Image 1: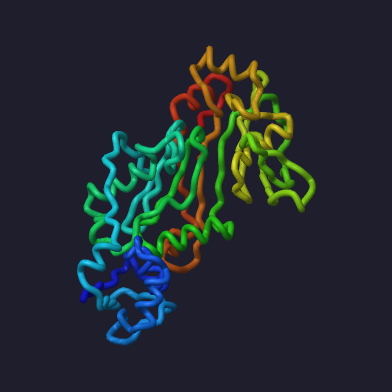
Image 2 (image 1 turned 60 degrees about the vertical axis):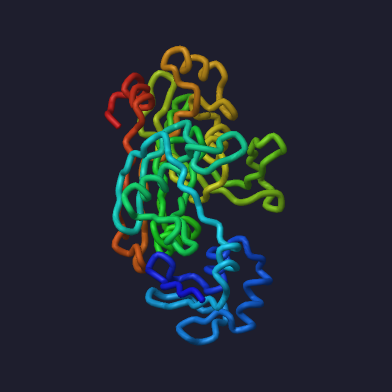
Length: 323
């Protein structure tokens, strides 16, 4: 028999979902069979599976140690080769500024040294995350940026924080503002609406047919324009892949340096003059609207990621104000 004491890091999730994480190699059928056979108890009573766990609950698994360990997968901490630029951190969350060129989660081309690896390693070093004692919970990144877009990325350190951050992004309770250097002189702001689709080449398109794609909404306003370029602030209502780059290109003001939706001649100029190979797009500000819950104390707080040096250099070259 094994006793699992639920902490604030695991509370708020269903018993069956927790068990599937704790015994991550076990088939779902095994988990539900053990629940039916009363081999799993919650606070000395038969566990049903649908209960929401609370801090202080005791979950008892009436299984042999060999069975439990055979179904457990202990996560390995990947030693990160790079650091993180922390914007804000407390006992529940960590917000950092992702550099351009660093991917958030692994993919087919980037399997190690992701931003997620760096954040997990940061928490491990500080004694805030122990994979053996986490009981199925792993701190989680709650928003993503394209590999070549820089700026604010958030992570929840415990389950309530992860759940509330995910809900905030899904329900549009997080105002996300970006800075972008655009090709052309934009004189007025506005809003781009349409429907987002992607083709087999991973290229996004904006269409008017709601049956074919997902709705997108992008607000934009010029902050300053000069010498054929504009520094714009862009606010996302939705969060589709390549959304800003696609919408600005559709307007006729592509993001400078964008190799997929941009202007090739401009991109060559920025490469030769500034050494910039990718889009000049930066997730600059985040404002959370969380009136209650575990992160209610962050309601109305604004978090800002400083401009990376290459974008700051371009801004100082073309524009008069300091950003």
